[in-house]
Length: 486
Image (cartoon, rainbow, N blue to C red; front, side):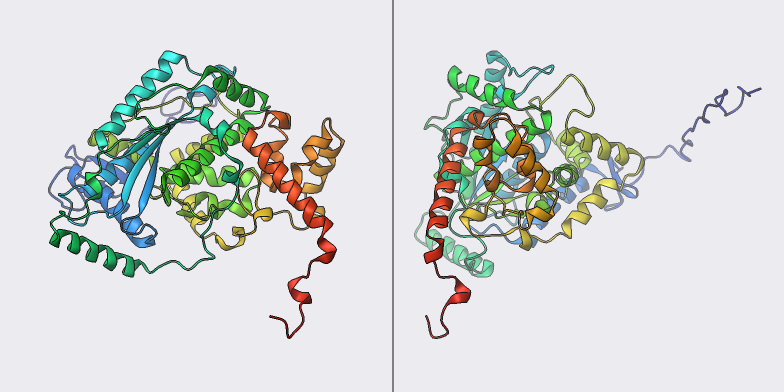
């Protein structure tokens, strides 16, 4: 017979574990100042009061930028905002860093962008976006939040990605192939310029004084796109067969629209708000998607795959818990938009599966996220870099990783594509894609539903490849040059 009394649950149930009562009811003191009571415990033994927690949070952001020295003084930086906690906390850090009361002010010129992707958000398993009233309310709240900053801002909708030029899928000039100026020389030049302007009575260069608002279409007011464009976007997402393909498609359109805005408005850096938690989830997700060769590019602090525009991730050292407490304590406003949903709450996509897996482990093993994150920091970026246009993936713009594809698991997927329906049209895209994008491309529906700029650029690359093949016998390779040749 089972014993139902005592600490056992009875009938084979596991004993009920109860937390021991604290030895004393006094609040824990702050580990930094030792005076005030602790308001938040980040890790075991790291208890901070509000003032010390704020100082710790600000110092981590400034240290991340100062340690990498990627953003030069006077450089235009575009902050990509989603309205979520991480990007809103990033905006608050930039605002405080540019304020006149800050001892060591940030020296770059910020701009803000918000991309409205509500039309692509399916609810209850059907591809139907938010209502017009909900979209207008979200845009109005985001515009009010952006206007309060006093920075130039741009409001864009995901439908505008359908009108992008094909050149957005080509690597711009610059990057690792060109020598970058010294950071120390740039700082000295910026300080000298400030002193000259102060001597001339101009008041010095003040990035925080920029107060002119701008918009993606020349206006600063939020407006919804045309209904025809919204329907075209919904057809694009409806053609995707799995939620994983829809997630990848949404990320691709967002990144291309961010890149286009940065190039047209003269920004050389783009800041995104991925936290440490999000980076760890993305690392394992991309590994499962076959993007192991590009993990350092997709999750590192610097992403220079575009050449002329560099993506930086200054929030990647913060845990989601730290960001949530900071926003709660200091009243950081957020505008939450719904993500891609489906009827099933678990195992709907690889992204969701990895997120549930890591967050579930984090509950019982608090060092899970940081361990995955620190492991990703050891990856090198060098193997994923390439400067040739024809050697870049059509969708993700990373270097193609298909060398020796007949020896990899990629060959069976190519055979399947060649024997399927519409093989002639699909076969034209396959050589232009990396391994991961080939797997995702199979679930994106027919090629006719792809954005026009993707089809245009694919046709352009195929024409150039055909032309190169026709004149290949007349080309002189580097290893075939004569010793006395120049």
